[in-house]
Image (cartoon, rainbow, N blue to C red):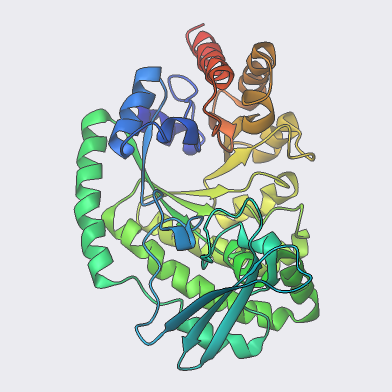
Length: 390
């Protein structure tokens, strides 16, 4: 089998010639490569089942955690940005306003020592959530201005998208690689816009407001999905790092996430592609709903940092109807563990989650570029090869 055939077989719940190994994110190696083509070549040299993550990287700084097509604002939007050194505050405060014809959206963020953007404030990005004094969206009066920030992809971006995709598809066909596209987004976008605690409280105090925001984001998300589906990606991926059961109850998930997840899965399947969903913690209570929604593969099975995880029980609940991707923790096991811990984790993942409907991967990233981390990566790959060649 080619890597594409192997991954598609696993994602379909079937048993390929052997369990594929495809890192869901591999920043340590990606940072050593000039582009995604070299990145794929280097993974193939390692024996991995590389794939082409089209549109997933790089993303502009102002929406670094929302991959896919560039985010553009309405041409009538004016952006104001400045820094304030306020008496009594430990950190400088970065202020940003989006002035729209329907009103002004304002955010304020602490510029902590580890703030990576200088005096700039991104639109959608993880760093802003815990450092915000004021989130961008706080009430119903913010909905109409927000519409000016969530507009369809620009024609110029779509033209470049098509040109780039043709090169990626040809390379993938020549190498026998799967093309993945994304990322779709739902509640994760609302967390960036509203804040985590604030959104959770809104979901109980004013669920209709959350519904209104989700409808706006959901429609925008579909507009950003459709170009990928029109071009024929093999796998479309939605991110749901902030949609797991560590944060939401099953009933809230069923109200706020499930309808959009189901609708997106239907769109993807109509286009002849597979639908992947990234959620790395709080997965166990979601299995029934993910199957019902039509998710093909849940990406991010973490036996260490997802404290509810029972991989054997998860495999039973999936029942061949939901493929599983992950099985080994990236940060604690691969980046910080011993070679023996890595070896044991790989074997446990293969024994409990394989051989059908499973893709082996560290979860969710290997980002540290240190000799001891690379040794553990080698141990992971060697242990996987020993198993599949046994």
